[in-house]
Amino acid sequence: MKNLLHVDTTPGIGEAFSPPDGFAGSYRDHLRMEWATNPLTRQYVAVVGRLVKNDYPVAFVGPYASEAKEIVALIWKH
Image (cartoon, rainbow, N blue to C red; front, side):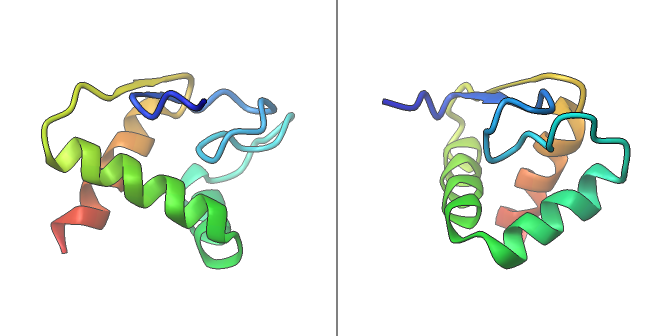
């Protein structure tokens, strides 16, 4: 079972918030493309966003952790 309270942005691990191995582009652009084309990513990001909005202790780790946290907050701000 996936731990939704632990979001890892490490490239190449195959998670919704992680870009592919060797990634060197814009993380926001990557996540936008995943959001637009991958329904599982949309679902995962939305669920994590809901947890954050409801003050669950979601831990964001990896090289893109701060960007991922900002993106999740923006999704539920609207």
